[in-house]
Length: 76
Image 1 (spheres, one colour):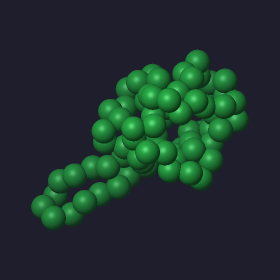
Image 2 (cartoon, one colour):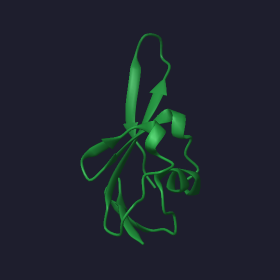
Image 3 (spheres, one colour):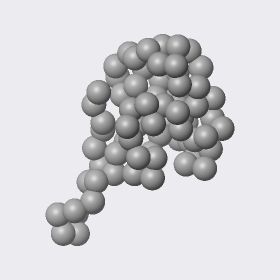
């Protein structure tokens, strides 16, 4: 299946968001995931089935630097 992840096309065999995050070596507790402009709740990651051509945004939350809270996009 071909997905667009953070602006880049990627071939994957992952069927769910959980499988995709595992394939990408991403810790699910530290990210927010949007599929086709809809934010998916973390508790739905395991049962949310991806489809060929889906557009996915994965946002990584990075803490640190005092009171500052940073959000950054992941790049592959």
